[in-house]
Length: 77
Image 1 (cartoon, rainbow, N blue to C red):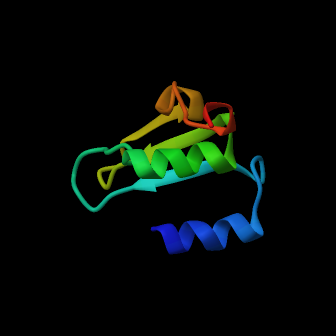
Image 2: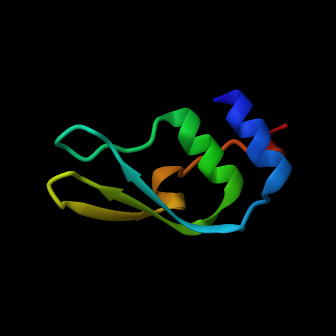
């Protein structure tokens, strides 16, 4: 994960993305893990969409601020 993140940091900045889709192989919806949520907060604005998609067609929409209400950012350093 860290190697992938390093490659992303070199190419993109916060706000370059507006929406992310999350789909897992299981039958129920799943939210991103906390490491993934941290990466999302680093590249997406707080009002960007997080779309959870299930194999059964179920869809739920959230904002980044809903998924990550207390992000760790540069103000915490």
